[in-house]
Image (tube, rainbow, N blue to C red; front, top):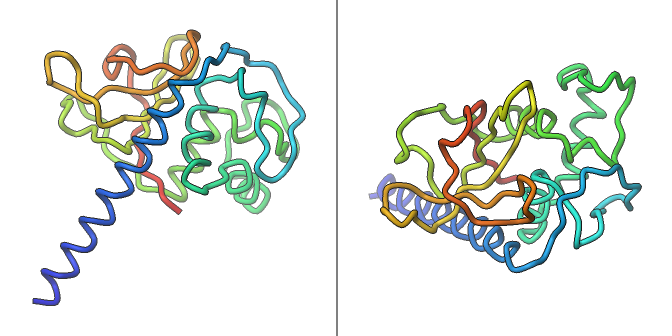
Length: 187
C-alpha cells in the first residue's frame, strides 16, 4: 500500500513538472523575439538579455525562470565549483556569468551533472513533454529546445519550442537534426 501511494505521488509530481515546463515554454512563443547571439552584460542573479532578443538557450533559461529556477545562477555556481568539468571551447580561464548559461555545451554539461540523462532514441515516444533535447546542426553548431505537450498534425510526436533564427517558436523538428543530448531537469 505504501509503495503504491509513493509511486502514485511520484508520478503526479513528475507529470506536474512536465506540464509546468511545457506551459512555461508555450507562453514564450507569444513574445516577439529577434534571434540575436550578441554578448550582453546582464545583472546577476536572474539576469536576462533584452526580452525582445535571444537565442535557443534563452528559451530554456526563460522557461525555467517561469518555474522559479535561475539557470544563470545554477550554471554559474556549478561551473565555479567544477570548472574543469565544463567544455573549454571558448578558451576561458574562469567563469563568465553573463554568457556561460547561454551556451548549449555548457547547458549539456550542467544537465548531465545535475539532471537526468535520457537515452537518445529514434523513437518519438521516448521524447515527452518536459524533456530537453540538444542537436548538432552541422559543423559542431549546437542547438537546444524543449519538448512540449502539443502533438504534431499527424499525432505521431510531441513538438518543440525553440529559437533557431525565427524567434521563440513551436515546431515539429524533433528529428530534423542529429540529436546529441536528451535530458530532464528539475532542481
